[in-house]
Length: 536
Ligand SMILES: *[C@@H]1O[C@H](CO)[C@@H](O)[C@H](O)[C@H]1NC(C)=O
Ligand SMILES: *[C@@H]1O[C@H](CO)[C@@H](O)[C@H](O)[C@H]1NC(C)=O
Ligand SMILES: *[C@@H]1O[C@H](CO)[C@@H](O)[C@H](O)[C@H]1NC(C)=O
Ligand SMILES: *[C@@H]1O[C@H](CO)[C@@H](O)[C@H](O)[C@H]1NC(C)=O
Ligand SMILES: *[C@@H]1O[C@H](CO)[C@@H](O)[C@H](O)[C@H]1NC(C)=O
Ligand SMILES: CC(=O)N[C@H]1CO[C@H](CO)[C@@H](O)[C@@H]1O
Image (cartoon, rainbow, N blue to C red):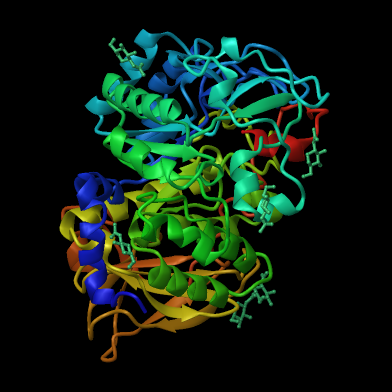
C-alpha cells in the first residue's frame, strides 16, 4: 500500500502543488457536477415539444441554458460541465451532424450554432453570479473534416485554424483491431474513420504544443473557465498532457477510458493529469447492479487508493454522453435511486449527466443524448427530488467538515446485495447503504455500524429518526429496494434538512416504480450507433 489512509489527505493536498493547482483541485472536490450537452439541454425559446433526429441538431443553445439554470441549481449542483464551445465543421456527414461539438475546425471561433459570443459571456456571468463552476470540454486530439469513406481521407488542411498545414498532423493510419492495446497506434493513428476524418494532431510537434498551450491559456482567461474536461486524453501522447494542464492554470479531468487500475492510475502517479472521470468504479457499478456483486466494487476502490495519487479528485458517474444510459440495462426505479446515491455520496466529485435525473433510458450514441426538454424539466420526478436531497446533504456536510472530501470512505459492507460506507468525521459522518434488491425487494432489517454509541441519527431520504445502540449500529428498515442515508441529528441543525422527523419504521416506497423514463420522441437514426459513439 503506497499511502496509509491517514496520510492520504496530506498527499492529496500536495498533489500538483508544484503546478500551482492545489487550490483548484481542492475547490473542485467540494463541488457537484451536472454534465450538459448544449444542443440537447434547452432551446432559446424554452419550447419542450420540438422533435428532432438523434444524429442532427436539435437546437439547444447557451441562451437556453442560461434560462434553465434554476433547474440545475435547485437540484443542488455547484458546477456544470458543458460540451465543447469551439467552431465545428459545417457539413452533414454519414456519421450525422456535429451537434455534440466534438468536430472542431477553428479553435479561435466559438460555435455559432450555440449562440453568439455575448450569449456565452452572459452564461459565464450568470454562472459566476450563482457561484456555479464552469468546466469546459476541450478537444486536443484531432481536428475534423467530412470523409467520403474512401480511405485515405483527402483532407484540406488549410481549412483548419490554427493548425492549417499537413505538417501539424500524423500521417493517416487506421487503428487496427490489435492496435487498441498498443499506445503508439491508439495515440498516433486516426480514431474511427467513418463519415468524418478525425485528423490526428501531432502533439509532439513544437508548434502544436506551443500553440495549444497558448490557446488554452487564452480560452480559460477570456471566458473565466474554472476547469477542463480533456476529451480523448488517452489518445494523445503522455508528455503533452502536463504542460497543457499547467498552461490552462485550472483543474482538469482527462478522459481515460479503461477499467484497468494501473493503466488508469498512471495518469495521476506520473503527474499527467490531476483527475479523471472514474471509469474504474463505473464498470463495477454497472456489474454490481446487473447481477454482479458489490465485492468487486469494494476491491477496485481499494486498488485505486493504492495505485492512484488522489482518488478524491476523480469524478464519480454511472452515465455520460458516451455510454448507454444506466436505465437502458436496468429500468427499475429503486435500482436507479441506489446508483444515484452512490454517485453523490462516493469519494470524489459527483457527476450527473443531464437526463439521468429523469430516468432517461437511451442506448448507445446518439440515442443516449435525448433532448432534456422531453422530460418537461420535471422537478417532481423521483430521481430529481432524490438528487436534490443528496446534494443538499453533501453540500451541508462539506460546510461543517472541510476534511470530508479528503477522507476515504470506510466500507462497512460489500456483498452480493449491499454496499454500505461511512464517510467523514464522527459527528458529521454520512452512513449509507445501497442495495440491488430492486423495487420488488421486501421488508427486512439490515444492521449496520459506522455510528457512535447512542448517537441520534436521521435517515435523510425519509426524515425518520433512529438511535444507534451501544455498539454503534443501527437497524435499518429496508423496503422496496430503496437506499438508506443517515446523518447525525446534531449535524442537521439549521440546515433546513428534515426539520421534522418521525421514528424509523418500514415505509412503502414505490414512487416511480415501473416508470422507465420519458418516452423518447426521437426518430431512430439510420446510422451505425457503434461508430458514432467513438467519434464524439
Ligand atoms: C504521485 O505518486 C507518485 C508515486 O508515489 C509520486 O512519485 C508523485 O510525486 C505523486 N504525484 C503527486 C502530484 O503527488
Ligand atoms: C478501421 O479499422 C477498423 C478495425 O479496427 C475497421 O473495422 C474499419 O472498417 C476500418 N476503417 C477504415 C476506413 O479503414
Ligand atoms: C505498436 O504499433 C506500432 C505501430 O504500428 C508498431 O511499430 C509496434 O511494433 C507495435 N508494438 C507492439 C508491442 O506491438
Ligand atoms: C482571447 O482574447 C484575446 C484578446 O481579445 C484574443 O487575442 C485571443 O485570441 C482570445 N483567445 C481565445 C482562445 O479565444
Ligand atoms: C442482486 O445480486 C445478487 C447477486 O448477484 C443476485 O443473486 C440477485 O438476483 C440480485 N437481485 C436483483 C433484484 O437483481
Ligand atoms: C426481495 C429481495 O430480493 N430481498 C432480498 C434482499 O437481499 C437480502 C440479502 O441477501 C435477501 O435476504 C432478501 O431476500
